[in-house]
Structures are given as C-alpha cells and as structure tokens.
Amino acid sequence: MAWSFDLDKPLYLQIVENIKLKIINGEYPPGERLLSVRELAAEASVNPNTMQKALAELERLGLVYSQRTSGRFITDNTLLLKNLRYQSAQQEMANYIEHMQKLGSNSQQAVDLLLEYLQNNKVIDKPVD
Amino acid sequence: MESYILECSGLRKSYGHKQALNGVDLKLPSGKIIGLLGPNGSGKTTLLKLINGLLTPTAGSLLIDGQAPGIESKKIVSFLPERTYLNDTWRVRDALRFFADFYADFDTTRADEMLNSLNIDSNARLKTLSKGNKEKVQLILVMSRAARLYCLDEPIAGVDPAARDYILRTIINNYNPEASVLISTHLITDIEQVLDEAIFIKDGQVLLHKSVDDIRFENKMSVDALFREVFRC
Image (cartoon, rainbow over all chains, first blue to last red):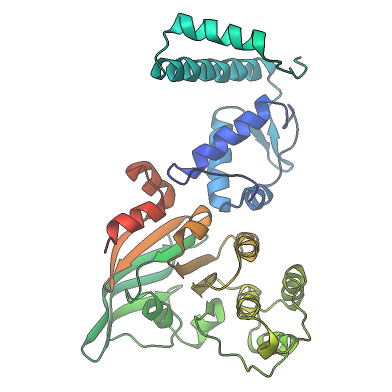
C-alpha cells in the first residue's frame, strides 16, 4: 500500500496531513492539478468517500481549490504556503523540545545539544528556495 | 428524505429453536462500503442470505431499494457466497459466459481485465485452480456486475496479502458511486482502511452501526481494537 496510516486515528485527518506535507515539500507544486478523488483513493488504498472528506477539508483550509469542470488544484497563494510551512516548522520544534524535556534536558540544553549535533555530524541540506 | 438501498426492521430468522437473527434493525445508504463484523455464529451469513432471497425471514421485514427480495431485487444485488457453486469442470471463460448470460449487468470486458491483472488463465478449468485463485475468479464474477448492492461473504479469507490489496483496490475502483458494498469478515485489519461504516453483530443482534472514522475519533482506537474489546472471550 502506497500510503501508510495509523488506524487508531481518523483516516481523513491523516490524509489531510499527508497532502499538506506534499504541498509544503513541493511534491505537489503550487497551481498543479490534483488527481481525481477516485485516483487518489486508489493510490492511498482508501475509500473514495474518505478521500472526498479529506479534500473538502483541504479546500476549507484554502490549500486546494476546485474548478467546476477541470478538477482540483493546489493553491498558488504563496503567502498561505509560506505560513503553512512556518506553522509546520513551529510544530516540529515544539515536538523536539517536548521530547528533549521527556529525556531530562531543559530547553537551553536541547538547543545546545542540537548545535553540538550539527557540528559533529554531516547533515546534507537539500536546496532551499 | 434519504433513500436506503437496504432497510431491515425487526428482522428475525430462526432455524428450529435456534435464533440466528434476533430483531435486526438496519438502514444502509447508497454509495458506501460497509463492514459486517462479528464473531463466528453471530448471524452474518444468515443476514446476507436473507438479503439475497436464499432464506425467508421468520418475522420482520427486509426491503432492497424499497422492494421485498425476489426476481427484481436479484437483478440489483450481486452476492459472493462463502462456498463455491460453480461447476468445477468448467473453464474460467465458461463461468464468465454463464454470468453474462444470467445477468444483464455483467461486463465481460471488465472481468477479462481483472483476470489479466491477476494472471489467471481464462482457459484453465476451475478444478485445476488453487483455492485462492478460485476465490479470485468468483470475486471477479461478482464485481463485474453493475449492481446496486454487493454482498461479499468473507471475500479475502483465502488469498495472499498482495492479491488482497488488489482485491480491495478493485472494490474501491469498480463499484459505482451509487452502489453499496456490504463485506462480512473477521479479518478487520485488512479491510478497515477502505470501510465507510462498520456494523458489529452479536448473537443475531446489531450492537453498533457507525462511521469508522467516528469509531476511531470517539474511542481513540482502530475498528479492529474496538472489535477485540467488545467481543473479548
């Protein structure tokens, strides 16, 4: 199966997150046409109604828009995409700090450890626009 | 008013003293994939046989698209029973021809495509096929009809995981948006990703009938986990 899910949580929310991520990392570029509900459902191996619900939620969030005859498209609102990326990054950092606190570090130590890690390990960056 | 493809009220079926269904009230909408989930002997197959007119109710009523089971309802219900009823000496294509002859809504091209994707030779005799391949042929026959209600009794029990994925994709892709699919199984983990709704049935009664995402949201667990909790032995 192409997409993997945590069956303890509603699938449509996981699909929303999954597509959000693909929009953020550019796998689905701004303005690009999305596959049809049925094609996406088949790709993800989920029910078309579940996919429909997820796309409706993405539309509500303004990340995709539909054009009556030609299908659904990824938003080309760059400000919105920038915000989305910023919010997701904030969430990742909150998770990092929370996990480090569980391991017994305070927030300053967590930052120091991160810098130390970057000094000692080669991290290969992908080009950033 | 919403229209239902299947409506049961106060449905009972007993075999002598044994109550197989004990007052089932159920309304199934169109356009959904619904899991009929229950332990062995809970009444799943009895319900499917009643829907298909293979049994008659002891009491209560059952309507398919507003009509009682009969010739008209059989035109719009496609049933996959647990056991095979096809003649073992036939070749696969004989079975296709039989279905095309029997059901006006049978699509031979669609059936051929599915046989191809699953690498099943249409010239092979049914008795030479493995158990799993025989099950696939039967499912292909049933899913190649343009029915309004598909009733699948344990459709994936005997096939390998790769074919299981293909079959689930087939179910997703092939049913038309107006049709509903009712799948009875106890292999819940394998199918819960494609379900819209789940029905839990126990001792001939419906314990629960809900959207699967509502189950996950309200109980914070998968349908499979809830099943294990509800039916703990």
